[in-house]
Length: 185
Ligand code: K1U
Ligand code: ZN
Image (cartoon, rainbow, N blue to C red):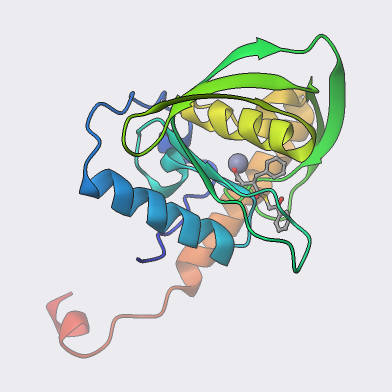
């Protein structure tokens, strides 16, 4: 298993519509386990494949937050919302691709989702509470939608400009190549 770098907004791969998974092989299993490791390491409660640069419709989640509680890792391949409650609920969302920024987003309080597991077996389930918020946030990633897309253009612009600056600063901080690598440049 290995940790994969998480893409930071703005990045065109975070705005793309991901492709359905059609092949259930070892590479898919490896990606799912890497995504779970990357999510727990961040730490986060969810992660979508496009956030690690893979434009495939797969998400991972574990919304068990209490220490001492048994973790509940979930892998959802080709997830689709098939029912949403009339009732909506606000939640202060964050995103591992937009670190340090949070904003209230209002979404359906409950959703019914269909998906397949890593063996291609079909599942259906109802999500509520934080699980409902997270599954909707992650499925949005598969359609190139970020939580800041629900904000007004001014707030979204402020966050995007701050993220552009963060990315410029991080690029400048990169250690200079040493030894042979430097000689080749
Ligand atoms: O998709 C992502 O970027 C992951 C994101 C999921 C999410 C958070 C909040 C509302 C909806 C979806 C995160 O995990 S951000 C980090 C976070 O919320 C968290 C981290 C540690 C403990 C508890 C929460
Ligand atoms: Zn996110």
